[in-house]
Length: 323
Ligand code: PMP
Image (cartoon, rainbow, N blue to C red; front, side, top):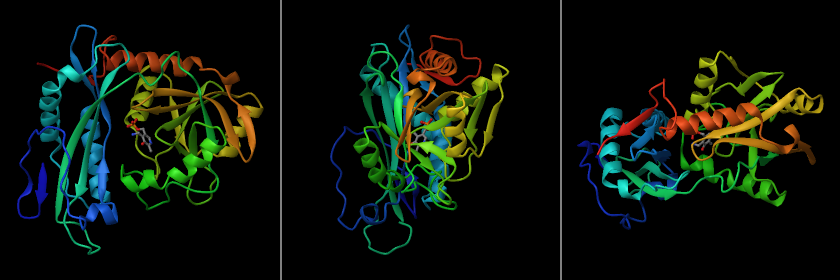
């Protein structure tokens, strides 16, 4: 689907996956005016195709558009297009347990000019790809490197938008994490490098003294759909989730004095990812003896059950795509 300032968003169409033709001066190559989303289609055991809260992805796409000065899309129309598209590609949704169809909607600025001003032309595309289970065997807790040199986002920046620059700016820290033999980066705030924000592609939760805590949304954290679902799910079970500023020193101290029972990440790819090890300022800390905790385990089972239609969905999150 394309956008021009004269016609607005127009010409939705389905075409085979193919190369694009863009001019070298296309603005996206130079100024990174682009936004994206990520969600999955699942096949339930009786063969139904299901999408998990897709309307939330289009809502977030529009929030990202707003921050990047990209014209917004019609969320209801996008959801209908997506359902049609998924139906067309339903044979690509793997039947094997744990597999799904990854869906990547994205918008790029296409106007050919080197002017530094918002583009007047855009293309929105959705690409689909079958993906395997995030966990090959059982669920392996991940190890985390607390990044205290680079930051991902700062107040007033683009941290809560899903835009390319946030990810390319993170590569350097990912390399540092890998060189320390850690799986992922834990980002601290962009002012004092004191408060926990999020993991590379996940939001983060802590269980401290039987209470669940997560960093409050502050404009520089991505508003994860899994994060929101985890909070709603826990609250529906009568557990309150405390959204607040959490300093890395508090996390380390809670781990040292035994009150940190669990730490886990939440995101579309892994759903729930327990954290078993943390490195901060050159010291390694083991969390929950390097094992997955009961809350993370229950959340994983429940969310995957709802996503795949194996469990009842009292929330109406899992949308069936007929046909
Ligand atoms: N933070 C970042 C930076 C991410 O890329 C993602 C993945 N979209 C998340 C958090 C988790 O968001 P969600 O639960 O919507 O996948």
